[in-house]
Amino acid sequence: MYYYSHGVGSSQSPGPRPARHRRRGRTIHRLAHNDPVNDLLPFRSLLTPEGRALLDEVRGTAPAEELAVATRLRRDHPADLVSAALGQARLRQRAAAKFGAADAERMFFTANGVEQSTRTSVAGYRAGRLRELGVTSVADLCCGIGGDAIAFARAGIRVLAVDRDPLTVAVARANAEALGLTELIEVREADVTEVGTAGYDAVFVDPARRGGRGRIFDPEAYSPPLSWAVSAASAARVAALKVAPGIPHEAVPERAEAEWISDGGDVKEAVLWFGTGGTAVRATLLPGPRSLLSRGLPDPGVRPVGRYLYEPDGAVVRAHLVAEVAEEVDGGLIDPTIAYVTADAHRPTVYASAYEITDQLPFNVKKLKALLRQREVGVLTVKKRGSAVEPEELRRKVKPQGPHSATVFLTRVAGAPTMLVGHPLR
Image (cartoon, rainbow, N blue to C red; front, side, top):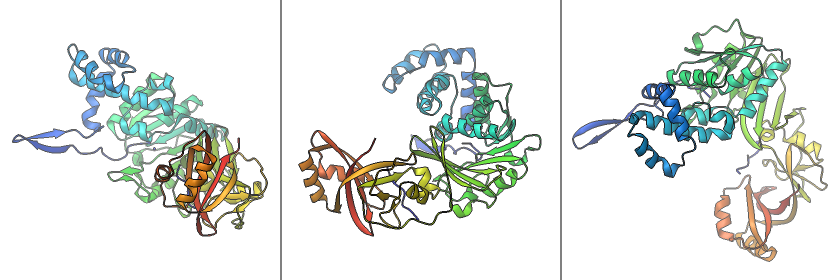
């Protein structure tokens, strides 16, 4: 097992219950953020001519301006509508990072939808894979606000988008209309476990992986559980099940292809594919795509730290394909449990970031501080694998100053806490 370095969906369960508070002898109800039932009517009001005009008026409102804008608009519009418009404007600003500003300004969101929906680049890649497999229609189960359905439709695939949450369904339907995709997307409010998918080439399932206490790590605790999703996949010619990147490899069904996907170096998701004609394990890096397939290699051996250090992409680590990277660069591990590869020669690879190592120190903050002062390092990047020290804590202690930059790796070498100092190779 390698230590990972430190450097979202749908709604299949009811929303949070209102929190009760007592004030001055009377009971009041404070609506939980993004309560689907109580937010449905304000959301529908945004689809009216008055609501759409307000959305145009509050577009781009900065957080510091919201109070003044709300006070002014409430003179001529209902308070609930003004609040809904400002909330939607805020969500659109957040969503721009995932959906792009052009789409985000036209789409509608919920707080959970922004957080859990798939990034456009990842959804588009998945839709492209379905098209390559000959898919022309897909049942998108647990569709959320419709991010994946939009990507499928833009790839020319007919979509049945299903979710049981009324607000989520209303938002998904509004998004299909806003982007001119209603001819390809049918949105249905229903329990996904009761929807027939026999008329569709493919099934895509994105179960809810968050509960009242945060992220859910047990695949059988997903909503719906992974076992149900796998059974739904068996009913289609092709299927894709979106799961958390941390899914245990032993939980992957034997007949599935497992793919871990990163975008810009950040691991976004894992997908279990059925009907692709194989059971490969792969890591896919976006943009690209660039895919590294498992070759069943044994774990690479441990060797002393050489001149170069390779930091495999997170998707490569999650897919347990560090051995494939080590073979590609003719390298070995610095420690049997750490996903850093070392080599004496530089061999570029798209699946790992390369660094030239200039210094190797036993873990000692004072010695590192003296070295950085001697090198006049003022810009310090701190990375860690297998270390309990937090990067910000180390940065505060060494107080870097000077015109130069460096990267410090907090890690273990052959079991010993170690600091490696170097710089990235472009």
